[in-house]
Length: 130
Image 1 (spheres, helix red, strand yellow):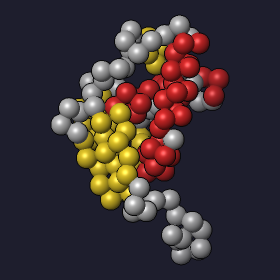
Image 2: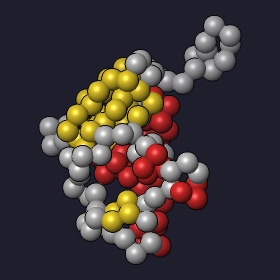
Image 3: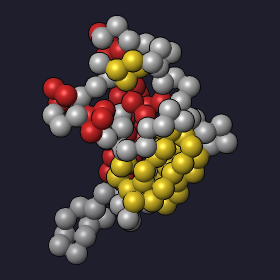
């Protein structure tokens, strides 16, 4: 797909659905791809300044989110959603390209997260941030 100028367009979501257990967000895109994104991964990768900082050096690794749940999903214009989690974090704006790339790379991103936890002496069950 391309836009009017001929530039490639990012896939557009066709469905965003929260699982009944509130721990998985299902996202389907118009290119036929579909992903089941865990609330834990979405929370620890939050595109918020609180987690990402303003540079790579400021990025935080968040522990203790194994059982986090999604409480709310709100549209942000026509380009993103804001996700509210049961730990009261709700400042991340998840743009369509972010959700798409997170889905495509979820296994590697989760592996990197586990490595970061180990490196920083954090774990999935004990709250903490470094």
